[in-house]
Amino acid sequence: MSDFIIGITGGVASGKSVVTRRFEELGVLVADADVAARAAVAPGSDGLAEVVASFGRDVLTADGGLDRAAMRQRVFGDDAARRQLEAIIHPRVRAALNAACLAAPGPYAIAAIPLLAEGGGRETYPWLARILVVDVPVAVQRARLMARDGADAALADRMIAAQATRTQRLAIADDVLVNDGAMEALDAPIVALDRRYRLLASVGG
Image (tube, rainbow, N blue to C red):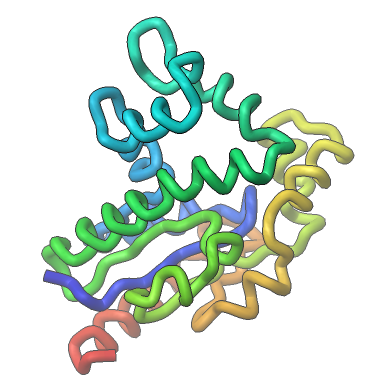
C-alpha cells in the first residue's frame, strides 16, 4: 500500500512519458490520467452511460464506443458543454488514479496528470504528497512539436498556448526536473528523486 503519491505533470512535448518510463524502470508504479480517462468512458461503463444521457447517442460509434472526434466537435468552442463533459470524466479519473496509487506495492507511487495545473492543482488533488514538474523552455517545446508531430510554428504555438503557462506549472511544483537536453541526462536526477521520494515515504513525508 502506497499512500505517498507523487503527481507528475508538464507541458506538451516536455518529455513526461520518458520520465515516467524511467521511474517505472526503477520499480515505481505509474498511474496514467490519460489511460484512466479512456477507461472512464469505456463501452459499458457508467461514465459512458452518463455521457450519452447528457449529449445523446450521436456521440457513439457504430459499435457503441465513444466517438471521440464527434465529442471533440461537440465541446469545441462550447465552454458549457466542455465543463459538463469534464464533470463526468474528471471525478472518475481522480478516483481511479488515487485507487491505483494506494494499491501500489512500493513505498510510493506516481500519478501522471498532464493537465494538473489546468485541473486545479493541489486543490483538486489534495492527496498528492508532492508535485514534480517536468520543465522545458517554450522554445524547446516548439522545436520538439515541429520535429515530432510535423507541426508548423503557428500550430505548435497554438498547442502550447492551449495549456497552462510554464509559470503556472512551476507555481504548483515541489520538485522541478529540467528536460531541455539529451534524454540520457535525465538518468541521474531521476535516480536522485527516486532515492529522495523513498526516504520521504519511509518517514511519512
